[in-house]
Image (cartoon, rainbow, N blue to C red; front, side, top):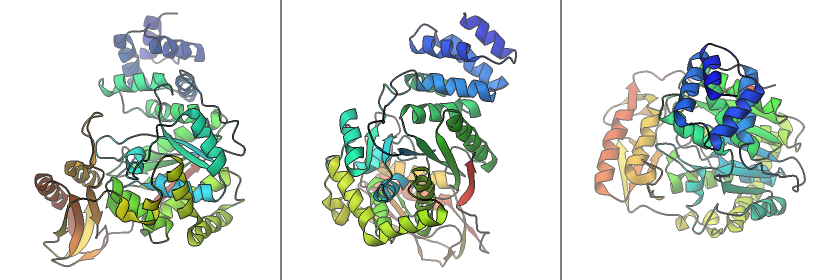
Amino acid sequence: MRMYDLIMKKRNGGALDREEIEYMVTEYTAGNIPDYQMSAMMMAVYFTGMNEEETAALTMAMAHSGDMIDLSAIPGVKVDKHSTGGVGDKTSIALVPMVAACGVKIAKMSGRGLGHTGGTIDKLESFPGFTTEISSGHFIRQVKDIGAAIMGQTADIAPADKKLYALRDVTATVDNMSLIASSIMSKKLASGADAIVLDVKTGSGAFMKKEQDAYALAQEMVTLGTVAGKQTIAIVSNMDQPLGNAVGNALEVEEAIETLRGKGPDDFTKLCLTLGTYMLIAGKMAADEKEAGQKLKQVIESGSALNKLAEFVRAQGGNPQAVYDTSLLPKASIVEEVVSGQSGYIGRIDCDEIGVCSLLLGGGRETKESSIDLSVGLVLRKKVGDPVSEGDTLAVLYANDRDRLRAAKERFIKAYHFSDTAPADVPLIRRVVRK
């Protein structure tokens, strides 16, 4: 088998069979196929596409290119959750303890943030002492003992995807539905869960700006998970404005804690309850949506979800007291309000620009090597549809550097767009996709 022949076949619109795809992935991961040939293949895929069978074969080949985590020692149905990322998306921090408190086992791998979207690991490190650098043995024991664990993605999980993504990133071949879906799902399948719930974001703060593209990606990933024998459900959710009010690591952790106390923002609470509902059904802890919703609300009202978060933080080296006393989380030295210079309604927010504001304050990474300030960020006081009078506070910015604060404030003001009338309401939950 020659890579040259496979490139020509795909370039001419042909479909690669499973053996050809497995050969390509295995040999490229081993370093036997050069980058220039794989670049040519990725460009051929970009222009001619992949059918359902090819996409499934690519996904499985990448999933099996490294370690496949075995969770069989953990009793019950193991459920994983994945978000395609967005601004203010602190969902896992509230959702994992909610679902675990209901009895579902969650063995989750998460990543760090890059650019204007935050990473779950960075946010969790706002708890003093918390670490996701735990052994696989610790990981499995913790899921057995308390029902939940989150560890960082290792280099041995789907190494083919890591290598391929780096190549696609510099050859303008990222934006292909089959390649995106197989990249995400290869890591999810290698992580070993029995069921997967996906949160696919759409809007100005999401990777998929158009709803039809997000829906197509959700369908593709649900198909891939189902073909692999995993119960897979996708929620398409709106990301045309930040999720909740807080953007920035420790600030988002504090908002997640408030949500577990029953005092979180309506949109964030609704998303957690929606995703949690499908996780409970997939984990066989609820027969239907009504029962699942009731159980999730009960663990919030009883305080058991908040206690589960403290138990989870303690198990991974963090200070559990910070769950009950958020003054122990990192705090910025400068707090400044941004006030409105006009009256009207908030008609639109450039969501990705709000993420950039947090980045400018020091709360995000420009490169993978960048260090971040866990204490900085912003808390919105006005969101889309809210009435505003001149002088009202639009947001509160948290900073440790005056120059960074000035730059973020200028950017923030340009991200808010006013209208004379209230805009039409856009539902948070756009679609539910399942087989």
